[in-house]
Image (cartoon, rainbow, N blue to C red; front, side):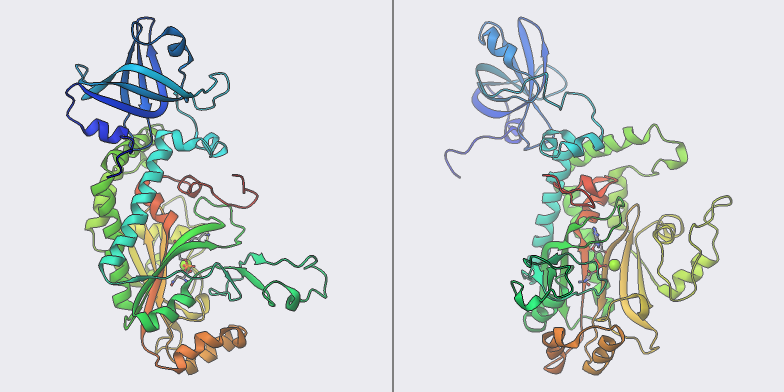
Length: 478
Ligand code: 4AD
Ligand code: MG
C-alpha cells in the first residue's frame, strides 16, 4: 500500500468507528443546521454514500462554515464516532476544516435538488459529481473490468486494432473520413498526396484485424472505440462508441452464441455482486421516475429483479425465418399495429419487431440466427441453402440489439464471390483473403456495444447518459 494514500469515503464508511483520527477530502453535497452545529454531507466519488460531518461552532470558525456551500471542495480532519442517528453508522466530528476550492452558491449549477438528465447533459463537466452519473460511471468501470477479467480468465488475448484504417469492415458506408488534404471536395482530390497515400477513415469495427489475430493466437478480443457516421439521432446510437469484439478459431455459430450468452451473464452477475449500492440507488431512481407513468408503461420488474431474471434465464434461440413467421401471426395490440409491416423474407427486422419478440413473446433475451445474406456483411458464413448466412443478433429487453456476430466465411472461393457481389475492392482486402488462402479454418466472433450493456445494467434510457462525453450528430462538446 502507498503510505501517502488518502482514505476514501467508502473506506471510512466501512470502518468500525471508535474515535479514530481521520483526514478526508471531498466535495460538499449539502449543508444543513444552524449557528451552533452544521451537518455536512461529503462525497469523494468512491461510493454513492456520503460521509456525515458534524461541524460545531466552538471548534470551526463561523467564517469557514459560511463559506462552505454545495460543490465546494474541502479537507476535513476529525474524529470518527459511532452515530446515534439511524441514517448512518458513523459520523466525523470535525476538528479542522480547510476549504480547498470554493463554489459560489450563486453560480454553481448543481444544487441539492433533482436536475433533469437533459440539463445535466449540458453540464457534462460537472455531472460526475451527481449521484446518478457517479453511479453510472462506476458501473461502466465495473463492466469494463469484468469484460477483461472474463476473457483473461479464459485464455483470450487482448488485441489492439487500428483506429485509422483504409478498410470498411461492415461495408455499410457510414464512415468518418480522416484526411489532411486541403481540398477533398475538388474533383481532382488525389489521395496519393494524403497523409497515408490513400483514402482513410476512422474504424467502424476491429473485426477484420481481430480475425487475423485469432487465426494465429486462437482466442482474442478487442476493446476499443468505434466510429459510425450514422445520422440516426436515436436514444441508442452514438457516433463514437466502444465495442468489444472476441474472435475464436475453431468455433462455429453455436459455440459463438453460447460464448456470447455466458459472457453477458457473467458481466451482469459481476455487477450484481460488486455494484450493489449503486444498483440500489439507480433502482430507486428508476422507480420514482416511473411512478408518474401510467401503470401499463411501468416496468413489471425492478431494476435488480430484471438483472437477476436475465442472468438466470436461458436465452431463446430462433432463426430469422422463424422470427418472421411469429411476427406475421401476431398482433402487437388490438388498436396499435406495427408501424412497419412485417416483411417477407429478406427485409431487416425493425426495432419495434425486435422488442416485440423480446418483451412480449419470449420475455427474455432472444438470439436470432441465420439471416438472409443480402442484409448482412460480406464476411459471414454462407449456409447450404445459399440464401442465409450464419449470423446472430442478440436482442435484450428495453434495448433491442446488444450483440451482432457471426461465423465467418472461411472458404476462399465463396469469400471471393461475396466480395464481387458486395462490390468491394478486392485489392483493399488482399491480407484478409490470404488468411483463407493459407491455413484457413472455421472461426467465429461477435461485437458487443459497451454502452448498450451499460444502459441495460443501469436502467438508463438514453445512450448519451452512459458514456462520459457523448458524440452524436451536431454534438461534440467537451
Ligand atoms: O452489429 P454490429 O454492426 O457488428 C459489428 O460491427 C461486427 N463487426 C461485430 C463482430 O462480429 N465482431 O455492431 C455490434 C454492436 C451492436 O450489436 C450494438 O450493440 C453496437 O455494436 N452498436 C452501436 N452502439 C452504439 N451506437 C451505434 N451507432 C452502434 N452501432 C452498433
Ligand atoms: Mg448489427
